[in-house]
Length: 601
Image 1: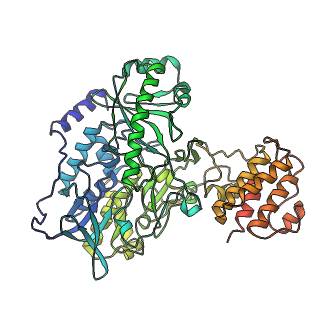
Image 2: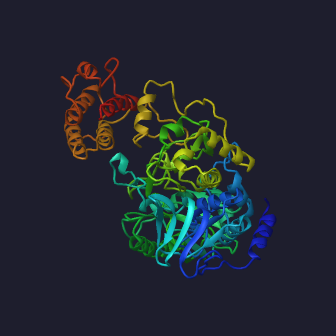
Image 3: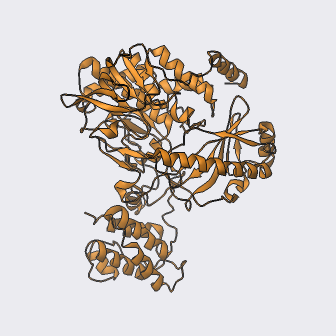
């Protein structure tokens, strides 16, 4: 779409008037208290929930959306995340309602936030979804022990609904039920999650001067299109020295707004509690202070930023990761990197396993890049609570697979599927416990989705990514599934590269944590390794050193081998093949580490 057409599309939406930021209680709201009756109730107004509500309504269900927010659009509107992480090559994977919305906002790499907000409002209104905003306290509603809608506890109102969709970012409603969740990387024994971001609003940027500057410095400097710019910018962001250790500036993602301002997604915040409003508020205040310093720094170092000034920041933080539903079926890294599409897939994913940094000392991880994989309805349900669907980033994706499935376009595809399924469940009077696992019902949802324009990839065998014929490939995948090996965007783990003895000690330390849930072993392994290499941190890994360190780890975690000698490690099932005579490769170290991991209970 040309800039002129995009501007016309934006104008058409903006002519509907400014967004209304005040409590709205729809015509079905029982003003004197009591019960309102709907087929489907959606809690939360994130993009994934909006499309779930629209899909349910368009499929014939009387649908209500209830949200604590005054404005609709969640991360895209309140978080002002206006650049899209999506898979468009070799074609657009995200179609259906996402594509409908995307075209309404101009079908560009970045969108204007007010235009996006109006597009969401228009879609809900056109579908006939009733919307209640600024509803603060909500609880699950039960009838005879079965989930039947929600309670608006502060308002003394109940909503009776046959199907409930939790589309809040952190699954706050579902967390009040018996639905099982964990937080961040807890299931792998690690207290970590991806860093949060405060999107900064910067005025005074000369976009054309920035374009000229990027062009003059070449593609290695940064990438730029009509409404976006991203990249390393010659190392300028990474050279920034923050004022405190719990913030950091990463590579810049710049999205142009219709008013000429630029939204910057680059400021990382560490140490926040995603479920504590006070902690999130402190994070925003911290980000605003650092934002002033960042903009001053960019004024000195980026073309087009000479007159830039901080105009504000998003009202909500971009929280990347919090709860993960322990769903009836869970998307894992193996399914993603096996390019697994099953016959019951209702959405297509293809974004890389690209995780933002977890601490101020790591740059993030790219575990691999799939061709395509399928999302299933059972990733949104739990046998612990009937008639409940969880959509958005808190759905049933494990922490590694989440690095891909977290992107909103995929979440919107899954949300549309949940909306269709909820409406169908109402029409057929089928609970979610049966619906998500009934092949015939799921096939019916797939047929409806196909008619709605969704992309449903063919269920067929596909080659897994990476060097599948390498003798260390299986070990590589075992470790990658817990985030301990990376393939990068090109799916090349460099299995034949030499590795250091110290890196092997750290690898086994992480195996102890993520497979055995032991945090008391790593220090011993590192200490032993440094003694063996005489404190030479770069010393190569030899079979003798590997044997000593692996045997020590096995004795602490599982069963001691007869000795650290290679032949005894083979007898214990911890090594295979002849003893390497030269330095061990990464693939060798992975095979040893995966063998130890395989002994975990």
